[in-house]
Image: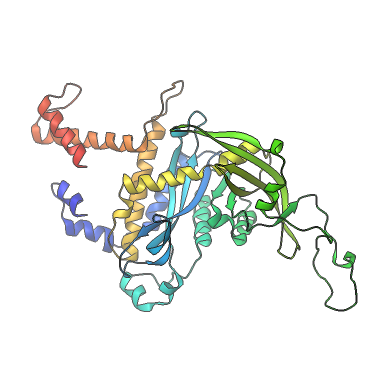
Length: 412
């Protein structure tokens, strides 16, 4: 906040600090205003809602929600804050870099020790109504809120941190939300969809002792397999090589396989959860995704949705590197949410500028979000040059004005 105040002629640091940390404006309603506008302007039926979380390494124990937990930014358990986030993704049919994305919200995860600690709750201003919610429940809150503003989309995508939670998958099916969710290859047990189960009365019993069976089970000699075991039994010719995007060093591709399956419990008991398992072999690693809810399911479609994870990783990187998402040093609940909402508004504004810059019938790629940010700063710098030097930079800006404008851009 201090360097921001120093750049503005009539700004005061204390006013900015009060606006961010103490002012009572409602961050949730402000974010909803953003979602409502962007939903009307930049959402299409083919869009994807991606769910993920990001972390903010912290020192000490006073920042709201900070605890020793897995920190993705460091790749290990560390002292940090964690936020569950939603991102709307509108992929370009032409090129990867022309994809448009904008935020649907960030929910700060509060570990149970924070919920129970009245002293820390009071010192950081956590509302009394805030209870413990798992990350997957925070994700559902973001999805439900987006649906309340008619954000058009065709599927939900998330990594194994969310996809491996059966309650999360179940809630998405209740909401009739198609999904492509990463799962731990060793954590999901399944059988081909056509596999027959025995009813309790059909299951052979060797004696009359024990409780009668109440669930449908797989026949003797047949058991479910996890993704690792399933992949070993797939012939090489049944894997399909698919290129899903272009990278800086060439096309990105891998080998994929899909099959319709039914999830079974560890004791080989029947469940009503069915869908498609999507397996990926890439650079010696096996990845697995559970997919559900698509009227027309193709391998290309599932791969395309599964790979939207790249864009939410890019979103976090740009939010932190370009817009200072991780620069907030306050400790309060109110301040954290004010800061993240304002940062999301800035990101959405730049995304909207990119979206409006699309021109039909041209092969020129869109400017990247960092390039758009620099263009915005340049416009502001030109206005400052005009104000303080009394000259219009324009297309024929003189050397002094150009140097001044470039200096402002560099400072920002």
